[in-house]
Image (tube, rainbow, N blue to C red; front, top):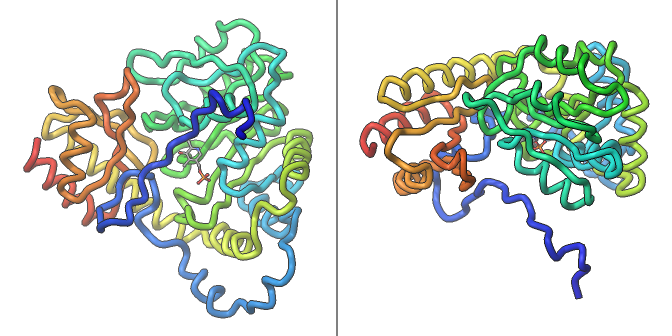
Length: 352
Ligand SMILES: *Cc1c(COP(=O)(O)O)cnc(C)c1O
C-alpha cells in the first residue's frame, strides 16, 4: 500500500516530549523562560470570530515586522511553519540533483540528510576539524556541488563560525549556488550573516522563533535573502500549502518580534547561565565544547554518552544523546533556568 519512495526513508527523530512524569527538560533546546508578556493581553482579547477566516497567505504584516527588525525589505523575508518547514522548502527550491552533491558538515542538524533523502537530493557529509569546527576550507576543496547548508553556530556542537570565516568561504564559493545558513541559535552570542545579504545574492539565512524567542509551540520560522530566493520559496510554498502559518501564530510572532527589550533580557540570562554551566562542568573534569548556543555539548572521560543520559534520566533530568559514532561519547544539555542548572550540577556531582 505504501509508495516505494518510503522504502528507504528514515525519518528525523525529535527529542522526547515525555508525558509520564515531570522532568527537568534539557533535551530539545527549548527556552526555559516564557515568551513576551505582551502576548498575554493578545490572548485575552482576540475574538474567536477572527478564526473563521483563512490567515494571510503572504504573511504581510509579520514580514514587515521581521524586515524592520533586521534592516531589510519585506520582499527579502519568507515565513514558514517552523524553520524546519522553511528548510525543507529551501532544499526543494535550491538544491539540484544534477550539479553534484549538496554539502553539509558530518555532524550537524540531523534533519538535513532526512530532507535530502525525502527529495532525492544527493548529499555529502564533510568531516569536521579534529576540534569539532565546521571545515569550510574542506568544503571549498570539494568538487562541484549543488549548494551548501550549515547551522551557525553548529548543532549539536554549539561552535560558532566568525563572520570573517563565512565571508572568506562565500568569496571562494560559486556565486550561482545557494548557501543556506541556519541561524537557529545565533541570538545566543553569535554575529549574524544578515549583513552579507546585500553583497551575496546566493545566501539564505534561516531563523526560528522556537529558541531565543521562546515560541517553539507556535511553529514559526523565517528566511532572509535576496528577492529571487524568497520568490523561489513562495513558489514551493504555494505548490504545497497556501497557509502554513495560522492566524494566531502570525499575530503572536509579530508581538514577540517587536518586544526587543524582553528578548534581550531573556537571552542575556541564558548566556550567563550557559557560561556558568560550562565553567562548573569543566571544574569537575568534563570536557565542554565552546558554546555560542543555548546548549552545551559535553563529555566525561570513561563514561559513554548513553550512560550519562540514562543516569540523569533516572534522576529526573532529560538531556539529549546522539547514538552516532564520532559524537556518541557526548551529551547535549540545554541551558535551563539558574535553578535547573544548580540541580543538574548537583546531580552530576552525585552520580559521576
Ligand atoms: C531547533 C532547530 C531548528 C528547527 O526549528 P523550528 O523552527 O522549531 O522548526 C532548525 N535548525 C536547527 C539547527 C535547530 O536546532
